[in-house]
Image (cartoon, rainbow, N blue to C red; front, side, top):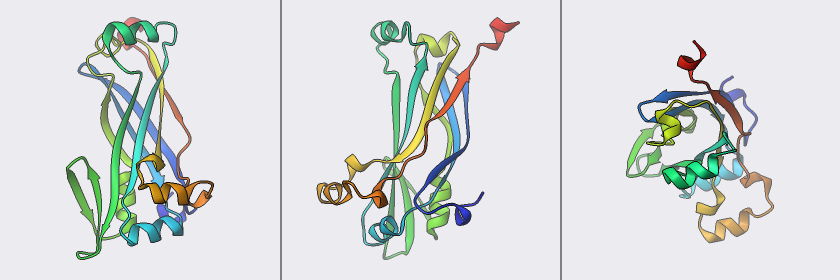
Length: 179
């Protein structure tokens, strides 16, 4: 399914995966992102749109609280990208911190935004080191709280500004213990 065939103003997960990395859990995913005409206009007129990948640990729940205290880890994580349009160069830019990539079209920028590779979460926790069985979920959404206050007020109650995927669940099992 390409972005050209997707419904305007949606984010849909097409694939998500998780794997044990070295002392972390690595998340990957593909999302189809399309903007509403209102968001496209705001972007073209200089508004930078903040998109956030979110992760939540959903299992083990029974000792998640204990591990949070003993390992000093958070059972959630976020990764923020900013999508902007540079009018002088007529390029769309996708920012991650101080780094950015330029694209000649909005479709290319949205396609790149929708690809997540090897995002490390739960770094240096016993859950990742011991390769414990766990489950989590992730999603991608437009983060309204990072918009300028005037746009936050404008966006309140308007579906043109609401953009998020459904939560997508995943599970990881320690294959070594299964044998």
